[in-house]
Amino acid sequence: MNLHLWSFLTILGMMCVTYLTRITGYFALRNRTLSVRAQAVLEAMPGAVLISVIAPAFTSDRPADLIALALTIAVATRGSFLITVIVGVSAAGLLRQFL
Amino acid sequence: MTQVDKTLPGTSPWSEFRRGLAAMAPALLGLVPFALVLGAEAARKGLSPLEVLLLCGMNFAGGSEFVAVELWNHPIPFLLIVGMTLLVNSRHILMGAALAPHLRHLPKRKALVALFFMADEVWAFGIHDARRRGGLGAEINLPFYAGLSAALYLSWISMTVLGSLLGPLFGDPGAYGFDMAFPAVFLVLLRGLWPGYRAAAPWMVSLVAAAAVHILVPGAWYMLAGTLAGLTTAYVWPVQR
Image 1 (cartoon, each protein chain N blue to C red):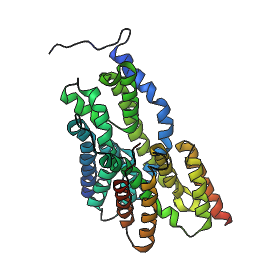
Image 2 (image 1 turned 180 degrees about the horizontal axis):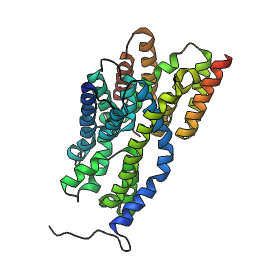
Image 3 (image 1 turned 90 degrees about the vertical axis):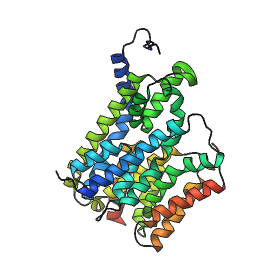
Image 4 (image 1 turned 120 degrees about the horizontal axis):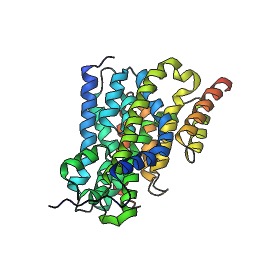
């Protein structure tokens, strides 16, 4: 069980900004309405971050990876976390054996 | 100020707490693989089980924890991780604003504690329950909200720590396809956030920009570049839901 100083400071920093986002709406926006642009930016933000984080998966040059990714996307549109993870992992594992 | 008893007829705080625990149960089924994958990935990046416990227990916002673990490196890119956490969790600002009318009756001290636990699922069930009973002006049912929070919080930290203990037993994730678990989880998260085709245009811009920068520029800059490209798109062509 080890805890490094910078690990702890990073987690502490994350906690502070996350808590800040949770109380900001309560304190600052209780009696205000946001502009359409501000709302659009805030709504797009989590999706823009998440899709940017997994973008490297889309740049693979192995056909097996790209087919597995396409299958995973198809399942993710309807399936639960569990189903999608199982399909994604087994598709990637199997296709890499054969392609 | 007089203290009014807000308990509904035939209920007690304890029964409302248990109702909160039970309401969260279906969501927990989906959470378990998500938490295990996060814990396993964190262990692979060198986080100890204690660090995983603190990360998930202090921050308690899954999406940002996934991003942080993906960025985790030596030396730790502190500013990048904290900055990305702020971006991922900025949706809480809107959620808090929507929840605020239902917290108005609470003392500030209690509201601040309740807001710490405002994860997506807690927010969704909590606000739905309040509106179902009394519309926009209804006070949140605090024992019910506490039940939702306790179920989610305890499951989240225990399952992520379990993942960090079990993960290393599987060895190299790339060998079996376990590395696909990560994009798979993100894709389901994105499905949950899906705003419709027109409003999702910023996401597509983010994807293309991030992929291009990933190919052309070494390091983790693609995340920031992709995010900013998407936000610029949303700012220039705002689409209201």
